[in-house]
Image: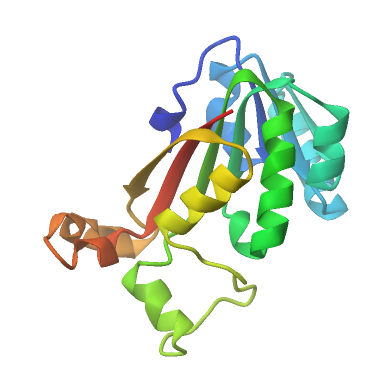
Amino acid sequence: MIPALRLAPTDHVVDFGCGSGSLLDVIHSRIEHYTGVDFSPDFISYAEKRVAEAGITNARFECSQIVDFCARHPAEFDIAVSVDMAGYLNDAEFERVHAAIRGSLNPRGRLFLYMANGAFWLERLKKRGLAPVSAAPYSSVRTAPEYLELLRQSGFGDVRVSFTPHYNALRRLHFLSGLPVVGGTFRAKVLVEARR
């Protein structure tokens, strides 16, 4: 995902649903400032401790609901990132949260949404109860066209989609994603770039 972000040294990046702030580990030296937002005090506390121990000085974390955070930071960020968060939102929540995220971006700002692809063969099996789900399963795993439509309804324009391999051993199957007819079922992760 990192090459797709096209980071610049002056970028202010906000990471929604940041968890422990692992994205910061790979981008802090490439940007001006990072802000991590999560509603979990435990995640925020752990992230702050980790960053302090690493000596990273261009980052801060805030424990907040996304909509409230965005209302306090209008048009502030160059890039917003959402990794594996959208699957926990129903459609109405998705639109409300992403409309708020759009408002936190400056006029040339971009959102990058990275999520499981509902068309991926394993996600299709999970939906039918034919494969095990994680201890904290997503409530809504969508296909690329569904993500695009929801982002457009949230006010985003110029929405582009690409696909990436799975992050575990299943990534070895990604070469099958180029096959005619069935290739789409081997595209594990959706990476969406949407301009404000």
